[in-house]
Image (cartoon, rainbow, N blue to C red; front, top):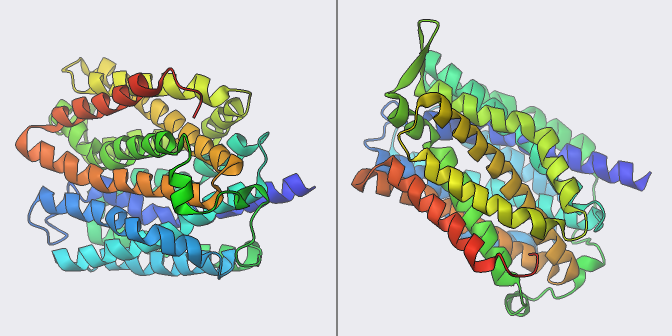
Length: 399
């Protein structure tokens, strides 16, 4: 019975996160193509705005981690939902770079509350036998928010523009308040599992063997998947298709195509991410799966920069999305396992810090390289990072 209760807890947490994520995910598809309607002057500003929420999360991770020892889980999640509603509504009215920047910083605070709350929750309720499955369950379900945001956001924006789309997604977030108040248990502040209490000092955790390897995995995967692939996918498709493709005589724009391809990933994640996590729960499963996933991701990222026939290129794009699902689930699971063995909340904060750094650097780096070189150079660089991790750590013990 306890297992069923824990599973319901994680599902509820994931659905609240999904509702909060819709407006943010919409922005990654829509803003690069509708930045002038948003009152912005260049794609460089878009890169900064898409990275701002990640940058502000870097100093927020330690205080938010400590905050969860003082407040209940429910209080943290309700605060995150309220911040999300404010920021998504602001997207519909913002008309200058400073306002956009402030809104994205608020979203960064909201996501820090959601992300650390989720990792602490999984660490608290899971065991070595189900940690990968629970991690995959959470990752798969909360990405339904990305499915709605990117698929519907791209399509709606092509019809009514950015501002109306943002207000629609602000309304979509509202039910998360009800879910948080009714279904998230009023747990005691700071309550943690017995395993989570070992090695809680940040400095001591940084000296632990393997912490750097875990942080590097999280940082590289976050940079490539969330920092580069998600924010630039519509631009990459536009570069390889000339702006869109004709299907039955109808032009499908790059924004809609980008939303569709991202949505495919979020559509399969509710079942593929838990399956990946379940495989990782087997003995040495993380080591056997993680390094091939890095190699596959590097190969596919490199292929996406090549001038291939469109059917083959689109197939490789699907393959890259599959690799992204595997990499995200496997690195999160490895971090939770390591935290349960030694480090507890401190190791998870280090891991999240590295991931946030990768996500913060990604959009600025990608759009900066795009200005100087082109979008294909960005994906060659991404391939190099994934191969670098693979060759550096492939002979090491599982993460």
